[in-house]
Amino acid sequence: MSNVSTPAAGPAPRLALVTGGGGGIGATICQELARAGYRVVVSDVDAQRARRVADELGAPHSAHAFDVSDESAVETAFDQIEKTHGPIAVLVSAAGLLLFQANGERPLIKDTTLDIWERSFAVNARGVFLCGRAYLRRREAAPLQHGRIVTFTSVAAQLGGYRSSASYIAAKSAVLGLTKAMARESAHLGITVNGIAPGLIDTDMLRSTVTSSGALAAAAQAIPLGRIGTVDDVAAAVRFLASEEAGYITGSVIDVNGGYRMQ
Image (cartoon, rainbow, N blue to C red):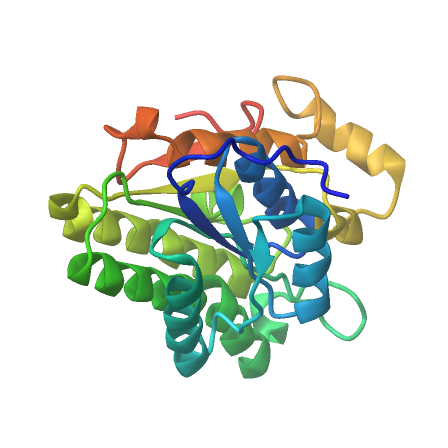
């Protein structure tokens, strides 16, 4: 049974596509947008994960699995989604990954293989470009009001990184520039493009890099608000950027970090 109420009868709710929606932050974003009245297409490279989230949301939400780093798969997915569900109003590019060495450590630059570098860019940067381009092509051909793109960068990119993982940091830095470029090029269509830069958020990704609860507590002490962020904190920021009320914000990056980085 769905935990999300179905909108009342009337015009079809706006359609939101969330990549990386099969778990973690992405799944919570799907839930938040569904509660806000959007029809959500949950996308993930893992079809079972996407279907599980969509099933939890219930009708009229759906799942569509595809690889954001595959150009042909992205174009096919956007065509199929829009043919089935109508125009995508909101694109949330939340798919991402953090790669480790075989020993479980984040690689220093001297230890980063070309495979790690290219796999990181394929999902974290190329995927944002391919999905953003697919969205903009279709909204150029068939405009709609209040188009929205929300991308994901990272506080690691803003700070120049920490604890190695240069491929992740560089890819997320690329998203910073791409977000501004898309915002400028799509402004004439009334589309806004903004990024989210999460800080330390309590996710499986964070916990995979922290070996003890004491380390998490120590990290929280370095944050002015005194706590690690939650996936709900991030999802709430996405919901706002997707809304009509955020219509005069574009080319910006919203820091969701508890004050860890201030500028």
